Image 1 (tube, one colour):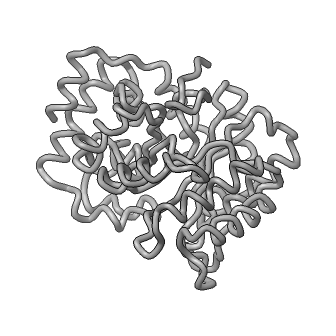
Image 2 (image 1 turned 45 degrees about the vertical axis):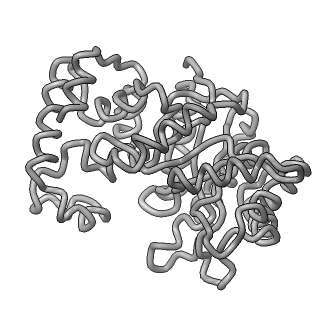
Length: 313
């Protein structure tokens, strides 16, 4: 599997990142192990998680995804094969959320314990924290980098002004610098990234790893009407998405997919992979056929005309 450069970090990852939010939720531990084995065996290497995954599920308390990954690492002994990504800053239910320096360091120790490793390859600030000066946040990250517990640092859900402020603050001594952005970006949701934020990432040579690459499954084509919303736990969040614009987009994707004997999921991911600003999109799978589907996107090459057609749609 050909690797792609992760911005100015100097690291390389495969062009697809496995979204580990499903581990300990819609994929139990044995299934998660099988999926991780298959993903790495095909030459992919990056997995994304967060300490709060999956606290949003009734009965869960957070840390479930990291725990599954840690158990897999302990079982398979493949730490050097894995580019491990996780995040900090979300609400773990104990009143200690946010990005204060001491909080970042303490939460990292908790994640390392669950992950059963002594370092994290890429550690994201999960959300901007308006109650903490960005300089303090970056000082916390710097402590982890200096101690060898984190290799690279990134920001998730930052807009252009927030990211610019963070990059400027990171130039001061004793502070880490964000090298990677994790934005919400896909064929359907484009305005939040395209424009000033994308230009800033280009100018600063940042890696970009978008989440919701398949729009929670909407871009796979399995949701064509509100009657389909019970097909997954996320379906109820799509009730307002059946617009003329989105239906036209699905139609254009279907035409492109048919021309390549591909799936719509592969088209959605290949479109992101072809974007010069994007390092690798994040996508999840809970079954082996789904995983094989999304991994196949790395082999799909869209023509310039097809990219234009999808952009226009």
